[in-house]
Length: 49
Image (cartoon, rainbow, N blue to C red; front, top):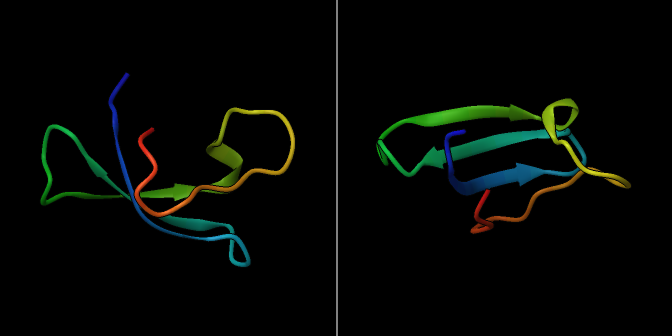
C-alpha cells in the first residue's frame, strides 16, 4: 500500500491532500470516507499515513 504525508486536511469539509513518499510533487486527494479507522475520521497536517 502506498504511504505518504498529509499536506493538509479540513475536518469541516472532510477532505484534503497527501504527498506520496514515491513522488513528492504529486498531491493525492483524500476524502474522509476513505479513512479506515474507528471513531471520528480526521487527519492532521504532517501526519504519516
